Length: 284
Image (cartoon, rainbow, N blue to C red):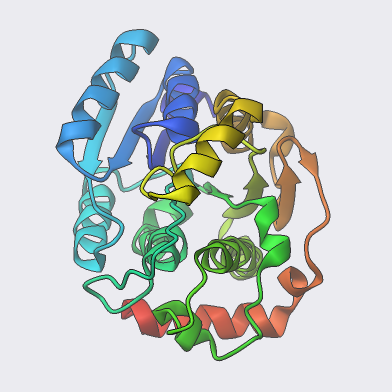
């Protein structure tokens, strides 16, 4: 299939990895759907990608991933307008150092980074199956610090009272890998492939919502980080590279298959997380 016949959906496409991946994907041709939190940032991102790639078939769908209602509306719209999707890049994420509970009752980092991508992927299953799609989820090497066995999964997803922001981020990244591997197992029969990605240690904006010493430390560390294009290029490659045809259930460190935390390959934990996540987002 020519990439000009493709339909690719990218979340978190207003900056960083998502915006860089969007530029690369749009330049290949085909249809690109950017899922962004709001129009204020989404419209400029869409317009600059269109202009730079000379591809008019770049579209914006708004959804704040901190709201399941908005994710459902976005997923329903995408499935209606593009009934065949050939790639989904689950990229949006954040790292929040202050315990914040969303309108849906879940911890913000875990909802945005894991639960809402779980929900969006399910809402798009029919188009993804129709397109024998690739699902690429941007995880992180931080998943090695994830501890999803330390208490009940629902308690972790809802944000324990003794909250540690860095632990929540690592837990979300482990959830990304577990979700990817379980999706690969379940959807192989439908022709969907699913892979997870450590994009590198990059100078992106995921920490920018924090203040105080967290903000100062991350600003300093950014001086020693790679540019977002390193991760954006890897994400676009996983979504389109012909040499990856049929590759599924793999964790990549940028463009190389890599080891994961042993818990990430725990099929019982993956199934449990799947079931708890499904109940959390209201999927039967």
